[in-house]
Length: 68
Image 1 (cartoon, rainbow, N blue to C red):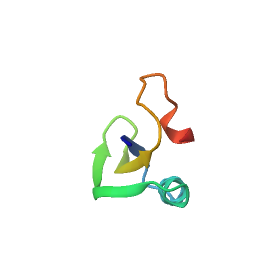
Image 2: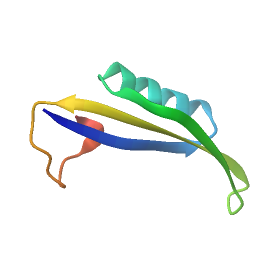
Image 3: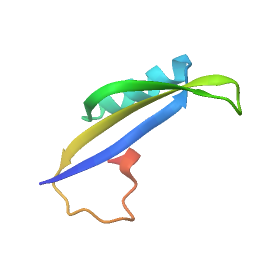
Image 4: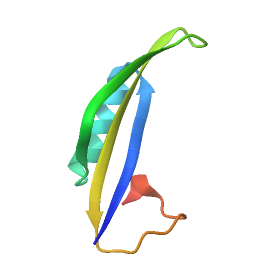
């Protein structure tokens, strides 16, 4: 078993919630609390959420994590 990790980031919009919800629906689990920070260049709040997933494969740097 391999534990995969990824961090989903997005502007603070409904799209962020959809991306996290999609990951959860594909078997990913929340890892820690969400984070929020102001992006002064874009002038918007940015959100981040780490997620993890157990897979029956060996890790390789070429893996497309969002497709697991």
